[in-house]
Length: 377
Image 1 (spheres, one colour):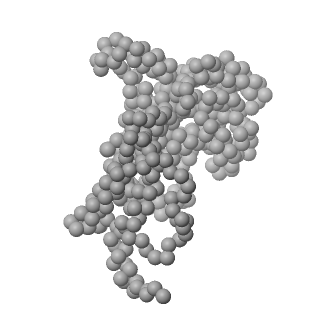
Image 2 (cartoon, helix red, strand yellow; image 1 turned 135 degrees about the horizontal axis):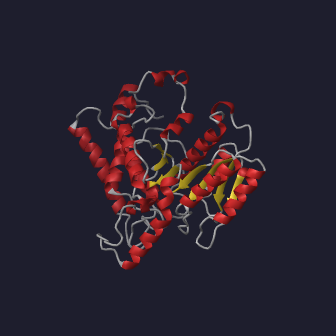
Image 3 (cartoon, one colour; image 1 turned 90 degrees about the vertical axis):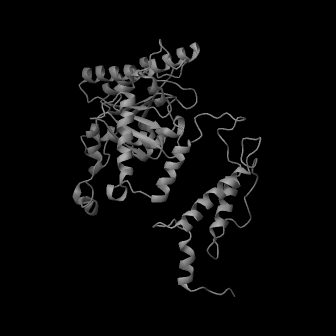
């Protein structure tokens, strides 16, 4: 029979599993050694193949799903983590080419480590300090990048491209319902319009929000994977003539598979014209720019001067792509995935609103969150 340790003895051992809360050179050194040891063990798995340790077949080890009888040492957990990394693709490996899964930068990895160490809770600034400030600074920076007015725009980070579409559609529903559904729930059908090349998460969002996938109107795309404006107008006219309510139009600016780019500016103009014609509230236009957002870096680029010295073919491609995305500034909201073309780890997706006041429709009253109401500056 295994001898049981006194809880105080166990507690002393557990303390070594945590970073030191006060200056402690010995524990800080052990923390750095642990991270360095993990990286060193991973380095031994690298080779000519773009997979850590090569392909993995079967289970990692027998009995790995059984709950342990005792507390594992930190070193044992590190070894297990190394094993779980086996077979992982090295996205930046010279012998591998992957689509929209970039290698994270050193600084972005460090930022994730900082958040992991200090565990900020973004629900309030007392629990997140300047991490919350950083979120709002990024919102302002990206707003300026895409052409929004940072003084009027708003946004927040969420759990991926699906989360950005979820927020976009939720804001759209509250907008068309006059803010009733947060309290009353959805009591009528609202339609979401997307192209047939739009990301499949539109199906998840329609289901999660309680609209149901039957309320998705799918618009055909042309040979360039761009939403057909002719078919969009016909579909909107049919819906408005039947008295159906269109909550949102999701424009895709960069499809995952073929980089299809919907003409956001033309969609917004069509939306405004038909809404005025039929006397209905204009649907919310959400631009799914999960991939294409990065082209906004060329919004003010002088393609003729070409200061960066791009090849002529590259200049033509960049000019054409941004020319088709220039209407991004007209979208009511934008979804951005930094983990696709921003060299950042998962999860790092930004939901951006041109008019931040619309977020108030999703807010809670102070009496519904009493302890949070007492905090925050």
